[in-house]
Image (cartoon, rainbow, N blue to C red):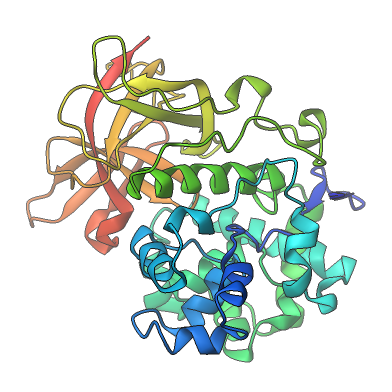
Amino acid sequence: MRVQKFQEQGGASPILIDPYRAFVFPNRLRQLRRTAGYPTLLALAREVPAIPYIRLSKIERGEIFARSDELRVLGSLLSIPPDCLLIDINSEEFDLAEWARPFFSADSTDEAEEHFAVKIAAAIRAKRSADRSLSAATLEERFGIPPVILSRIENAHKVFDRWNPGTVQAICRFFGVEDASALRAAVEQSYVAGELDSFIPLVSNPTQRKAKTRRKVMELQEELGIPIRDVSSTDHGEQSEADSGTEPSHSRRQELPKAGASGGKMLPLYGAPRVDGSIALTPAYPAFVEAMPGVGPRAFALKMCRSTMGIALPARGILIIDPDVFPCSGSLGVLREGDAYRLLAITMNRAGSLKGVSLNPDIEIDLDAMMPDQLAGVVGILFD
């Protein structure tokens, strides 16, 4: 796969175009349902009413991740082990271009529109980074942009002229402009001024897409109770590390150890610093760390990267995050922001509202406005 690079006059940051950016979860559902005697997805959907057809379609197309319970239902219906639906995207036998061929839309090849999709995604990220009150819930309430649509826009999954009029109007309201023409002009001006340089590398990045897929597949394997396969050993046929500028070779995943030296559970380690103080979910080194007893099945480790809590909590700390633990006042927690987490000290004001505070950057976030699954508790801290 060739990843297009593009740099316009005045813009300091080149734009990476990942033509397969919408395919975050390649899987074998299409192939295996046909083998099982379901020539169309609709025929299969009639047998699994618990999974809405639209969601099932997005799963088969690899546009969203299936849940482990959905894989079990599909596996049972197709008479196969559920993990057979999973694909090792780094296998020498796997060709993403060939896999995506049945789903690839020929009308998404307008280079200028592809570039603008990345710019507007970066512009939204920049605006939200500058104003921490612009949570996903706030954008839905104030501007009519549902979280699922926001995620697709911020990851440039579709070019701008393919969004419906209602979504376009909502984006215009978010930017405070009258129409699509004014929006294009405002975003282009921000790009030429270099205001989007810190955010463009976070959009349409094939390395980040692959890292996210690897992480999610490993989580699904663990939830399904099957041995963890190495799904990230070596990239084949993709851009080089030098081209991508991210994910150095020492962060390639190793086979998940059964237990640490003292018999404790081993957790995957992530973490890379972002300019806005959040922590990107990029595989880190070492690949795994040992957790203390009692952590939940979905726990993972996260490098702090920066002293966002001040000198009392140095940047060399490794946070143990448990998504099944909701943070309470007086504790530490993390807030999920797309493909990143922000470390916060959890407090409560006199009115009883839950707040999340960071010292560097100096921000305060209203946590009551967040969806519960955006918050996770810090249940331990390790120091190297």
